[in-house]
Image (cartoon, rainbow, N blue to C red; front, side, top):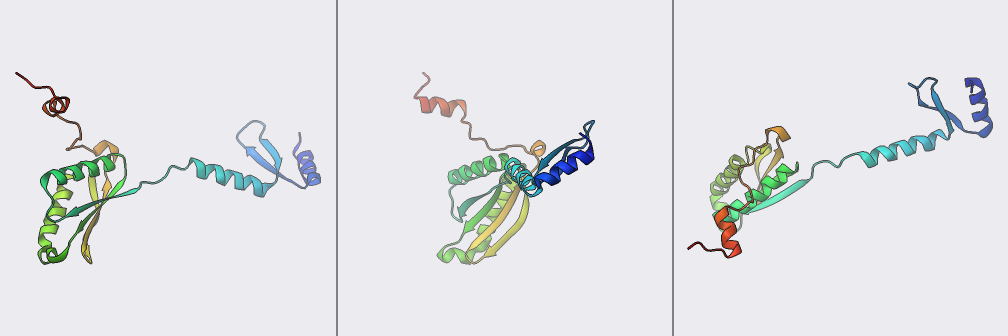
Length: 165
């Protein structure tokens, strides 16, 4: 259909002539309500938009045991591996505020342990009784996991109840 005929038909219907495929030969147009057309396009693009990275939080205390520390670091490593940011929060209670250097050392240890998976987004800051630091994941090709949740052969045999003679 010629352009003038298409425009005349759109005007008689009280609609708009919208070019849908300008690169096609001949160009493809539709007779639609332009406001509704734009709304549908924006709604469709929002549905396809991937959700951004989430912020996960790992809470520590100053006097954390080594096993508990490793469990939390493994969890943080898993979050970073999935592309999420991790907020490390260290909570001081009571007289622990008198020894803030212990908390600072612990947060630095977390930062060093997760350095192969992340970079520091916000440096450690004390806010009230909490010490917070945010870690952002490195690009996927630069990440290297140090701590894995996979068990060793001995641990898996112990869990299965297998004993060697």
